[in-house]
Amino acid sequence: MNGAGVGDSNQPQIRIRSLDKNSVDFVLSNTQLSVANSLRRTMIAEVPTMAIDLVQFMENTSVLADEFLAHRLGLVPLVSHNVDQFKYTRDCTCAEYCKDCSVEFTLHVKCTEPGTRAVYSSELISSNKDVVPVSDDESRGIILLKLRKGQEINLHCVAKKGVAKEHAKWSPCAAVGFEYDPHNNLRHLAYWYEKSIKEEWPLSKNAEEEKEADPDAPFDFKAEPTTFYFNVETVGSLDPQQVVLTATRVLQEKLVALQLALEEDQNPGAGTNMDDAEPWV
Image 1 (cartoon, rainbow, N blue to C red):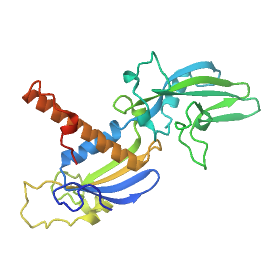
Image 2: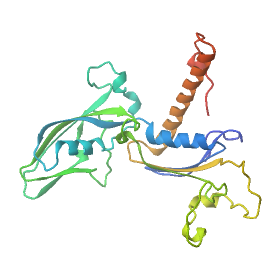
Image 3: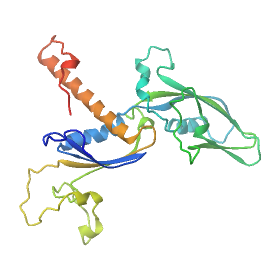
Image 4: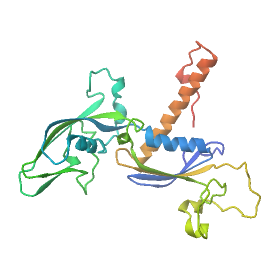
């Protein structure tokens, strides 16, 4: 399956090798290392999601301190498919938070039976049905804490829109695998080994996509990588394809802003229209 640049060898191309609920494996080709790495960094740090940012405790008689539990709540992934409908708090006109820039959660659990009572993230009650803790039919979500008989937790949370550059809790990715030149034909890596590189450094599956260079052939010092292998694993807040598409859009917006700034610097007062800017693919 090809993406951008199909039919044009001068444009970047994407080939999806596998796609499921929480991960996508694809090959990006006909582009430069700087572009591929920019996409990787953007997927990790600049794709917006919703995450709990404020926690108010009314009652906490568990063994966990307020600060510890607040940190755990902040790291709970929230479904963020409709994150674009929310404003960033800094762009909202409200005094503290409102429905346009945030979602409220409540949690009130008391253990009344002998033994231990586990409290799960799915027990957080949301004010917006579109923004809820990530869970599936086979589990109740993440265990937030455990209560013994007589212990109680009662709190109020506020989830806000943000990106992982501000805090890692807003990152939609659990990991982003990134590799190029699996045979090390470009010699960008210097492997440490005792006896044999091939035995001590086994090749990844990406090596099947390329041919190993002839060791007796002259080395090309001007060669550059053009094919990059990605494996994006998400935490469930966004679909993997949504993460890739959003990251691409963020990069486009940054490049358009840079283009407008450069044109304004060259022609002060010209006032370039955003609609006149050339799109980036």
